[in-house]
Length: 315
Picture 1 (cartoon, rainbow, N blue to C red):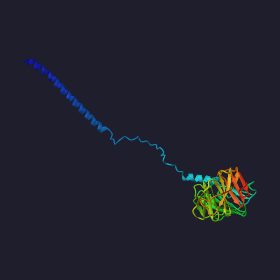
Picture 2 (picture 1 turned 180 degrees about the vertical axis):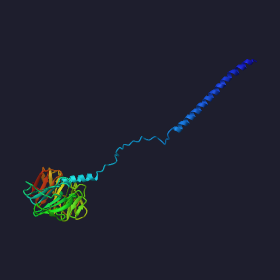
Picture 3 (picture 1 turned 30 degrees about the horizontal axis):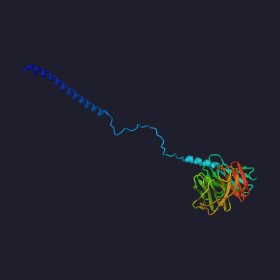
Picture 4 (picture 1 turned 90 degrees about the vertical axis):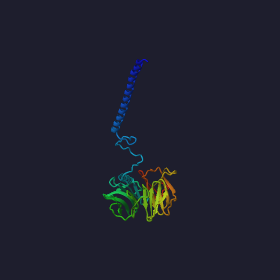
């Protein structure tokens, strides 16, 4: 046997074994190093609780589900503007009548005027420096009564004159009829909540009351519940005995203001009106105002005052 051959094989095997050992040691060190690095990163990383959220900001977008509500002052301003634009008319007969602008407390003052020639000319009448608004006027051959907003707080006050507005005295409650204020409908018994959001005109007689609203007429006896009568386009009401006279716009058969009548008693939601006549070419905005004394009907629309002597049939 050649002993040198065995010696050479052993010499070659030793280095191979050493390399294997060295490689195993290196792998082990790498594994240990990876574990240590992972542990170190785990200790220094920030704590996480689920998925990351959005970055917060300090700008708030409006919620589309929120509906802005007008402030109380905005409501009061709107009501004051409506009062300012309201017109009043009180007929005595076919020649004499009184008219007025509503004015508004803290704003433009009301203007009261008198005509004795069928509306051809008008003379301004003094109201007193404490009158800030007018809510109603009612006239006869003997006297004129007004419902005025008086003083800094615009208190609803009735006043009456027997000398065509030269002097004024305290009037009886309801002497001037019903009025519309920023607080509601002013009746002889006091101010009540309006039966609609934006009343246009109001009337009070001995037994019944009427409030004209946009799209309906509200009627009641005494202090009973209001009766809702669907009537679109009504702008003003006048009274003669047992009938209401209505000024109505938008009627298909009238290019202007149509005059209609309806019973003033036993009113129901199905009560109907009777067309009487048409004031052709009359301005049909919200300033339409009428009043009636017997068969004489006065209509104030835009800048024009018209008089009918046959209950509104012709003008």
